Length: 110
Ligand SMILES: [Zn+2]
Ligand SMILES: [Zn+2]
Image (cartoon, rainbow, N blue to C red; front, side):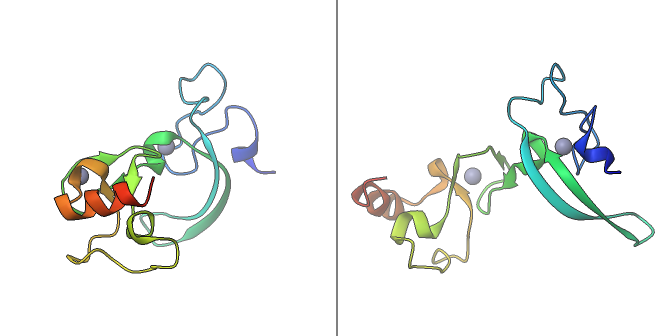
């Protein structure tokens, strides 16, 4: 029995329902994780994550980055790049790119 794979499809991170009509259904994503409880024990969870929980933090400002709004060095410099931006940032808003990075990204034809 996997309660995360059946009604009300709780988000594996925050336990909010991602079922149809919950408001989180449209943007939910299949996901799995080893959820860690406060006492240090872990539980494997396989199911869905809501969009809020899939949002990541920007490395250059305190705002969260929504799905598909994040920019990584690979997107700017090419898939083979595999590194970090010069200031060690890895995931940022498009608007948080430096002028030079934004220019390079433009040329990459994103
Ligand atoms: Zn969630
Ligand atoms: Zn940002």
